[in-house]
Amino acid sequence: AAAMGDAMTAAVDDVSAAVYNPAALGFLERPQIAATHAFWVGDIYHEWLAGAVPDSSGLGGAFAVSIQGLYQSAIERRDAAGVPLGTFKPYDIVFGLSYGRRIVGNLSGGLTIKHVGLRVTEGAASVAGDAGLAWRDDRFMVGAAVQHLGTKVQFIKEEAPLPLTVRLGVAAPALLDRHLLVAVDVSGATDDPVDVHMGVEGTYAATPTLTVYPRAGFTTRPIDEGLKGLAGLSAGAGLRHRALSLDYAWSPFGDLGTAHRFGVTLRFGQGRPAEDTLTTP
Image 1 (tube, rainbow, N blue to C red):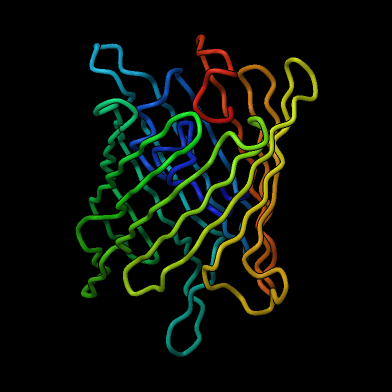
Image 2: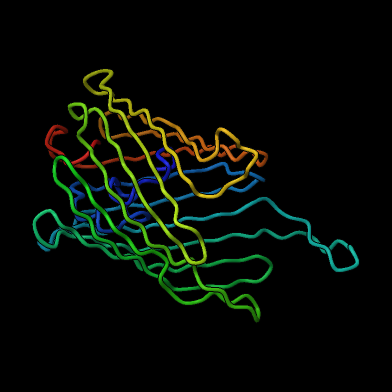
């Protein structure tokens, strides 16, 4: 997702739907687990772990559980006079429970309930939810999601709302005889301008069991002006060998540095043959 400019509202086709659009879980056919680790700028790190399993009760759809954390190295703490007071480690942690299922035909809906915990020197918490819709066939994918709808976060005496976000996306997964996926998202958050996200993913079968996925993306999200010509760009690649996928994404942040993300996804059980799936693996 990061390599494709986060243009995933419609294009997401794996367990990461728990983050981008829970409705896409309604199309999941095999149990999956996935994990990512991101080296952000300024000694900041982001990690994410999730698992999803299709519902076996006969209702259809799939459940997913996820946890993600944003944290950084220890920061020195000082009082108003500059006297050292030790160190502190700020972090955010989100626990989520998601469910998505087909409503009718190729239309699926989904929900995520999550607990958000934040800490600077004092802690705060919020309960929030995401909701989404997804429609797809062999040629087109459409998605919509509302994220972070929940209670305000209170640090000591100050309250702040979560960044309520609305995302709309479209994708074409079968271009060039199913060798190219193109996705476009539009997103808007509370007190932020509307952003456009665009991404492409190629599919190249290197061997009968090894597939390579080169990826690139662009976003208009405001970032450091020191990027100049690289502003908003991202790139990466994925490798899939049978049920195991490895992914990498590169995102430049100008004077702040460069973010590197690594991910792994493992699928279990038997799914439909690759040529019959609705999206690229």
